[in-house]
Amino acid sequence: MALDEAGAYVVLEDDPNTLAELALGEAAPQVVLVALEAAIEDSLARFDSVLHDPAVAVIFDEAELAARREGWEAKRWARHLAAKLNGHADVLPPGGETDHTRPEPGLPTTPAQIHADAAIEPHLEEAQSLAFELPRGGLELVQEETGSDQSFDPESWKPAAVPQHDRALNDGFGEDFSAEVPVPSGPPPLPVDAGNAAIKSSGLSLELESMHSSAAGPVVRGAVLLFAGIGGPDAVRKLLADLPPDLSRPVLLQLRLDGGRYDNLVKQMGRVSALPVLLAKAGESAAAAHVYVLPNDVAVNVEDGVVSFGEGALQPENLIASLPPADSAVLLLSGSDPALVDAAVALAAKGALLAGQSPQGCYDPAASKALAAQGGLVASPGELATHLASRWPD
Image (cartoon, rainbow, N blue to C red; front, side):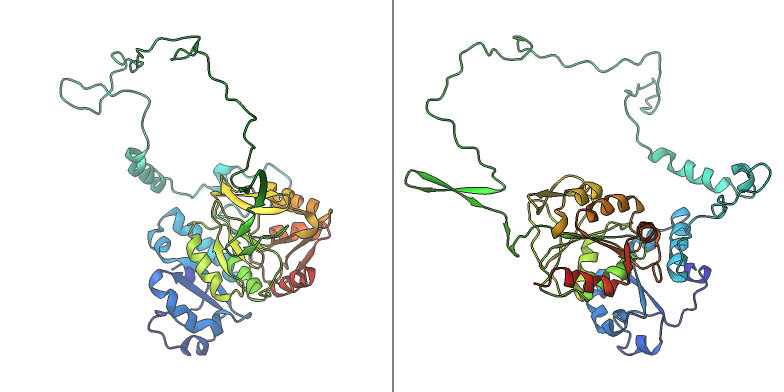
């Protein structure tokens, strides 16, 4: 139904496990919509000739998420799908397309007028169905004589009793610290950052050995940042397919996904990339000639130009600012957050490579247009890969 609403003409609909290898190419599609699930992942490799064709746009969706969409979520996904198929960024619901850049004489249209024909009953029914699932807490439920444990009497409610501690207090603490603490003799131990160094003992001398290394190889200064969102998977796929296997910098990819299924994204990008594609994990360091997909719950730390992953939330603007400019690059692909443009431009002013995806063929070019307005470079994903390879030829 979403494809029909978007005005698409479906030339083929089939199961990749049973579809003949040449059938997809013979259908000559302009866009391929893939509903990802574990059962079809191995079969997708048979259709690489079509899925890797620059003239064919590929849209990946999660089959599990698609099956659960209904109501508002289904309408929202249909609008985003229509934007991808038709090459525009208009994903607002009806009434949100009013152009306020050219005001007309008279009073502006009120929200009530915009939604005059909108029915409120479906929203009320949805709210009623969800009301009993909302979290409750903060008050103790008082049981009435009827035996019901879901009633509340505000007159008889009292806060829960504060637990009492039998231990005596001494100067505000629960233990007596008046006893003298023994002082160790000799010099204090040498402080060591357990995450960054190990101690080797040789006679009476101590030697610090750097632990900034990875099983994938030695780490290097700087990194390539790839940002993307709506329409981004296809652009990222084309860019990674053209990167050389010996790129001398790690590639960090942040692609905003509604379902957060980054493990599937790693598998799909690994099929086309000459560089190994990994999921960034806390406690590891980024190595050259590797692609790291960044989940939202993994922090990226930069110390002396070396990139490592830790516990915490991903903060893209801080990450951009912390990279060594001469050794780094920032690429803004389709669907990138326009709020990152200023931080990226500031890094480029210090010597970093900065470029965006060309608005032509870009589903969501807001960041690219903002970059171009400041004089930044925009190009196709394949051309961006060429720029990266020439930036660090060895």
